[in-house]
Length: 227
Image (tube, rainbow, N blue to C red; front, top):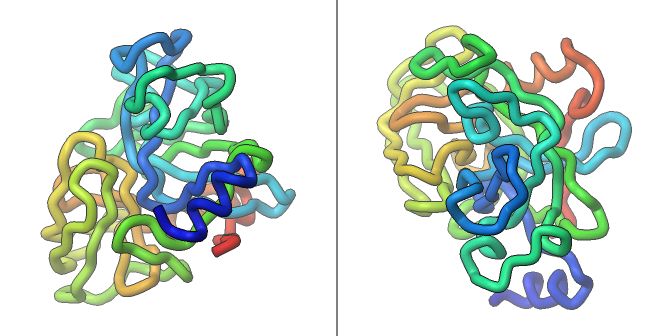
């Protein structure tokens, strides 16, 4: 454990950033791993109103026939570690779910495949680095052939190149495995997308534009780290 992680733990906060594994409740009190869905956080920051918010995939918060707004969010490490207490370990709540991706739209239709989580500032410490990936800024999708990587909860950091952009969607050669959904796609230290399938992601700039257009919690999102 790093010095920063120890300091955060001593402060009673969980270090959370782009690439952190999260467990979403999926509509039932959590008593076992079978009742949650594991995914990866795309980004964490503050919105225009000062709320601490995070982004992940929409399909992480909604199954084919359900709507997950109001569901609890936990650190994946807490749920998988045994001795899990939902009342203590809860760090956030799903506030909004967009339409899903073009391959698997889900109950909200086709969209940018993102969900907004509002985090408890007393329990969460936002960090810039998770695993082998550091996020310092937000950028539009880069030109074709640019080296890019993702930081997933299951497979860690995997890399490839950009192939093309299709509207708000980015096509790359970056792999993904179950539990990686929502992983931040980066070019250097710039966040450019949220991965939702092997080689497929939505542009983070398109997501932030949609948040601002919708208004409310998450609008005016910007990266905001303690370390």
